[in-house]
Image (cartoon, rainbow, N blue to C red; front, side, top):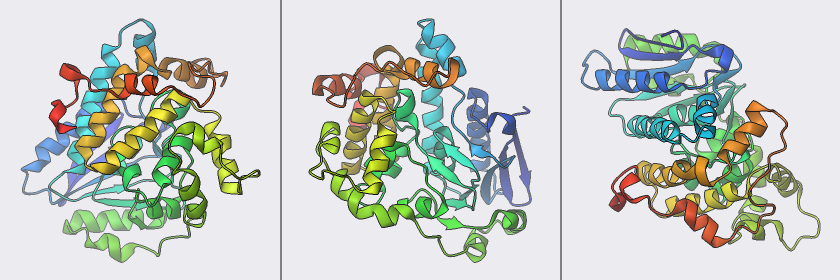
Length: 346
């Protein structure tokens, strides 16, 4: 497969995304290839750790390849997307719970599906160019691939902020928010990878790392915690301040582009997962939304506006942030026999 390079080098199983002209967006075949490799290496005593990286400078992985989802979904076939998500989420859970160390080296854009394969690894390495984001609410989806677990665990109300705005995190922000562990300059990655392959020992990652850069989100934490503790989406906008602080004005500007139904459901999912922060809980609740997203939410319209027609003028189902509770429940209720896991898991 030309989209991915899977091999063993020394003590390391290596997975390199090589679809750099498409910003290493994940195809279904890539998802299955990564899963197959991790299954093979699980019982392979010669593989001490796994390294996931990507070719090119622009992106580690800018998300999932959603063109086929749009084509099938607009034709009334919702099964393709549902099967893709099932397989992708199974991979996310496997990475999160893998018995051997996984080192993910993420540069450039890391969005959506890229978060799913990069930010659940046991050793998450960022650099100067790293920009991590969850922009799913902008295409009528919710932050998924287990990202609601990362958002639920983020300090204070950063989870709500990052999930509802889709704002981009640099290296310092990503470490502060818990999406990454260490900063290693990208020009030192080849030496680090050689060391990991030679020794099979992830301790060399710590030795190569620099102190975490300053985080703008850390400086904004007070404002974010105050505003994003609001009980619902509409209450975020109706804050008592006549003039919102710069961080909140920035947040509101980003949120104005997003689907209200997606933001309202994302807020509920993040808060639900915060009460039971496991990878299976997060994926199960995300799947409730994604399973219904083409038929009953704004996903197809969001893709049309952003990717297909590129008019950036989506006609969302809700015109304002007063999303009825019944509409949120309809998207987040248990799926019964269609659930990702038996419903007692959730």
